Image (tube, rainbow, N blue to C red; front, side, top):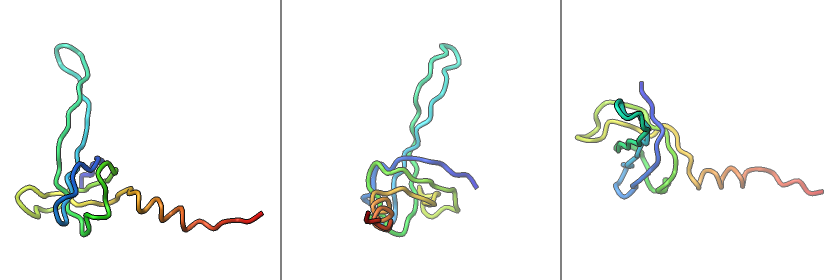
Length: 93
């Protein structure tokens, strides 16, 4: 199963995120590095918890629609990070 790490560029669709993966390649003749970006449509149950700019890991799955062949496996959202900070106990000195 292939996995990719990308950045969310759109969360406007219900249960679908648009994830962009950036890669760099070397030009064969001129030996200069250039950047390639590719968009992937990924399925998630609740797209409202993710924000544009969050980093997510997506995995390949069976075709879910014409363009959607990926699912969100793991995401680092601002909501989950703030929840982790709230869970830590406060030590009074």
